Length: 262
Image (cartoon, rainbow, N blue to C red; front, side, top):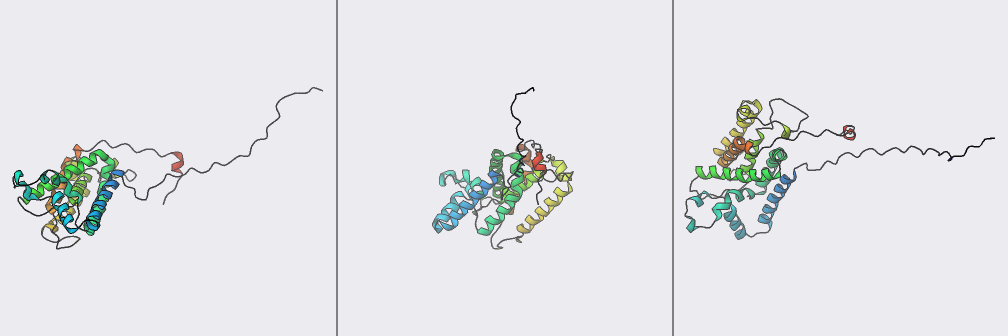
């Protein structure tokens, strides 16, 4: 009898089902970090202003960091250096809860696609220059006036103008995120029906504000419609200076393709 030697046959292990791939986490607030930080900064500044500072300290804060056109007709030897930083810092201050909530809503709506498109560093520069452009037009139209300008509305108007250059494409591509659209030229944007309708509605709203009919808020508080115009014009015409080529969308993995979300 011939005997064969060898390793004993192994019993196959039972098949273990692999757990399903975990779907990617979706944040509650799907905001770019730079925009989220900006919102937090605005809220913290107003919270300190409203809850911590005394009335005298609030007056000092507004006069030191708010924008006043009269500073540019007074000799520098007769005043401080506030005229150098207030064209930007005024955009970080707000006068009421309603003011900051309204601005925060529009900042999230139009700031998110712009930040995703141009990135954090360019967004910071865009904020600085759009705030300055808004303050500049306000100063020109109110030369020597002692009124105080505060609020991020000018910057938000700049973001609206910038969004008009890419967020409303001529050809609808439903599966493509807004910040990945090609940038429209100024002429193409002005020939785009959606852009034109948006701009007309925006101009009508600011025209109503100019004649004393606010769309929201306290009618006793004057709104600087001219600062809105300055920011929008800056964002619309000069957005290409801050823009960068959009990154192509990433292809979803096989596991992500099988995940249904509602």
